[in-house]
Image (cartoon, rainbow, N blue to C red; front, side):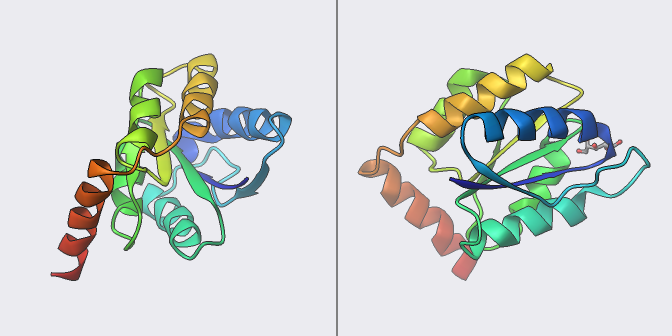
Length: 146
Ligand code: RB5
């Protein structure tokens, strides 16, 4: 799988750890985040990952900032993006099964590195269930058209 990853300064160390883990799992990772620790602005990275996923240049995205919230809000402004903040593995599984989230986000100031890896794995291992869930996703995307 080709995975777009993005982060701000609050999450650089975690980004590198997650990138390494994803590569160990056999995925290709494209890094859209900052590699430094200087203060920067998360919307830039949320948008870049969101656009890569929406354009089909990546199969899914991983976003990390302090909380995972700001960067996911930015990504969700890109049409076609369904970015979900997860701080536990059950939510990570369900956002794929029910919401077909194409971007997963979490906070480097909220979860530790081992939990972050487990969250990403739970998300990647899960499959969208379709059916009634697809109806609801279609309704979400109708909002984008209004
Ligand atoms: C940066 O200090 C912090 O605001 C950012 O990483 C994120 O938590 C925003 O949602």
